[in-house]
Length: 186
Image (tube, rainbow, N blue to C red):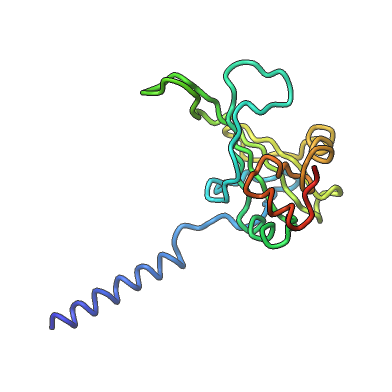
């Protein structure tokens, strides 16, 4: 009798695990999602592949405490990049921008991340954008965004990116991959 009860308990546990795996929390579909001509903000990007973090990286003379930028890439894009050294269509990058502080708790030096300032999203979507890549900016609470003008981001990425339109030069784990496939541009 004890063995039968144990077997039933194990069977019930296995069913619960299987149901959770199939019908558990829904994940956002892979690739970009749009509402008309606006990109829907990725909601699960913190579950993507973390590439790098920067502190105080800027384009101009921003003043005040430096911001952190945390870069995430969609898992499918990451896996294909590792296999081929190029980004597949529908790859998405999120650059999470966070404020920084140096005053808090036991910290005696250095900076740590605080409030979300916004996110930038880079999308490779060959069927939607003539230049293949487009850039979007979201405030902390913005749910949709139209593409930035070509002069805002595309030209800089085109002129300075190490692989296609992406700043692989700032992602130390991907530099050797791109160099191995001959896709890295100095």
